[in-house]
Amino acid sequence: MARKIIVLGEVRDGSLRNVSFEAVAAAKIASEGGEVVGVLIGDSVSALSGELIHYGADRVITVEDEKLKQYTPDGYSQALMAIVDAESPEGLVFGHTSLGKDLAPKVAAKLNSGLISDVTGLEVAGGNLVFTRPIYSGKAFEKKIVTDGLVFATIRPNNISPLEKDESRTGEASSLSVDIKDLRTVIKEVVRKASEGVDLSEAKVIIAGGRGVKSEEGFEPLKELAKVLNGAVGASRGACDADYCDYSLQIGQTGKVVTPDLYIACGISGAIQHLAGMSNSKVIVAINKDPEANIFKVADYGIVGDLFEVVPMLTEEFRKILVNA
Amino acid sequence: MNIYVLMKRTFDTEEKITISGGQINEDGAEFIINPYDEYAIEEAIQVRDAQGGEVTVVSVGNEETEKQLRTALAMGADKAVLINTEDDLDYGDQFTTAKILSEYLKDKDADLIIAGNVAIDGGSGQVGPRVAELLNIPYVTTITKLDIAGSNATVVRDVEGDSEVIETTLPLLVTAQQGLNEPRYPSLPGIMKAKKKPLDELELDDLDLEEADVEAKTKTIEIYLPPKKEAGKVLEGELADQVKELVNLLHTEAKVV
Ligand SMILES: Cc1cc2nc3c(=O)[nH]c(=O)nc-3n(C[C@H](O)[C@H](O)[C@H](O)COP(=O)(O)OP(=O)(O)OC[C@H]3O[C@@H](n4cnc5c(N)ncnc54)[C@H](O)[C@@H]3O)c2cc1C
Ligand SMILES: Cc1cc2nc3c(=O)[nH]c(=O)nc-3n(C[C@H](O)[C@H](O)[C@H](O)COP(=O)(O)OP(=O)(O)OC[C@H]3O[C@@H](n4cnc5c(N)ncnc54)[C@H](O)[C@@H]3O)c2cc1C
Image (cartoon, chains in turn blue, purple):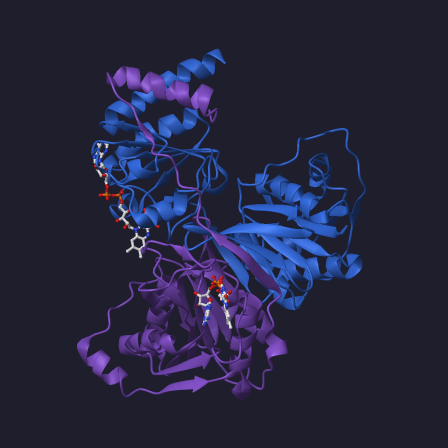
């Protein structure tokens, strides 16, 4: 069944987030040969329309307004509902990001629709569009279908491959003017803590430190390694509780859920609540001086040793091959 | 201040998970208050203690949910309400739960509703914002701080590690993130008192809801465990050789670098 699917592109610091291209790819599958319409909302976003089309959107609609400079659920839902009214799509796809998690349930409630959240895969099987998502903190998976109304999903970053970028692709870019009214929540201030360097939830490589890192300075070798691999630094709650790093780095059941291509756990014991946040990573490496540590049970590769010795050696070795590459 | 907390009874995901008959096996499993809802209950109690008023904890569940509701009362909530769907519904999704909760709440004149930001079993994070929209009140998700002055609220929201300071007004729904507070344990006197606190039980009928009004929009067709990972490879030999081998494996075999 061919469908028209709306994809919300997410802009951060003036560029599209990678998860938006993944969402376009997911929408392509969900459209079953129908149309993928990209949507960009903000104060100045239309310059990014072309890129969304290069990644596979058939056309793009932008809504620009001073009041949409920052995300608020009221502002964005008004813009989105105006587009839904104009386009009557059969489905919507957002990223399962802070913004997507906040906005999608509100829009679903407005549309009296279902919503399948945190999707890691989708396919057409047996005549159905089937979504896969983790449940029980990643310890199990469920497959879900829509039984009534719109196909609406948020997709987890780093799980669905974006389409190849094709700069020769063209498509219509239009704008819709929407009268944005009362915003009931007002952002007074944004305190940036996490945004230096690569975004943890979208990073392809994560170097995570635990209590074994022993101090704030102990994170330095991990940062070096992350720099060489163009990755992000993460942490266990053990490290956060001990004040070695900010809570914004915490990975796990109560922190961020990540699925990078490569996760290197340094001085992390592998408590169940930590595994909940990273066990679905593609390749896991454990560096721990205790050969009995639980983290080795989920690791693809392990080195038993002192992280302060191993991590700098790894950095050196990667530097060599990446320079030669 | 008229405060409501939305509470879900969840499977303790520290437990080992097995599947039987296509369902998560619940025999002998430990059930708990969803950890984020503990933050919600704690915050509600603190706001009440500072501003006066009453805390009511509401859950859509079955008879067994009474246990977690009693725990919430023992922590210090004033009243509990169980919306028992056992006899009426076989299946439900987030649409179902949010619809039931909003029908219950719509004439309660709540000033503040606190939910968890996500349930650790179902994991969608939908119920809070859905309920706020159905009640047509503002919401702020994943909050780490809440200050209320009169009918104004200042809230700190966690946005992937950054913090937003948000101003808004009551009535308001917020969802709790880790860091909001340290939930208390029920005290012995608390547990004794909880036995005498009101725990009302309602069914769909009492909310003038028909089965068709809350029929799920989505359906689970399969539940499975992730493929068992093969035992990992712990490297051996001289440390320098191990490091070289690891880099080589990641670069040429796993191709992740
Ligand atoms: C409700 C709840 C929610 C939680 N949520 C989370 C969560 O989201 N994320 C999370 O991470 N935790 C969470 N936890 C905490 C979790 O249970 C563990 O306490 C925590 O993950 C432990 O952190 P750690 O592995 O850094 O510390 P530890 O368990 O102390 O492990 C430190 C490890 O470092 C190793 N080590 C020490 N020195 C070195 C060295 N020089 N070189 C190499 N290795 C070394 C040790 O062998 C040890 O294995 C939660 C707990 C609860 C109860
Ligand atoms: C009649 C019925 C039958 C169901 N049958 C199934 C089934 O067969 N299989 C299945 O997987 N799921 C079933 N569910 C559960 C449903 O799919 C969701 O788990 C539930 O709606 C909550 O979604 P979530 O777990 O994603 O919670 P989230 O949206 O992540 O929860 C966020 C917050 O919302 C609040 N909240 C969530 N659920 C409740 C609740 N029940 N009561 C009060 N507050 C709540 C809590 O504050 C929680 O922290 C059923 C639900 C109902 C009502």
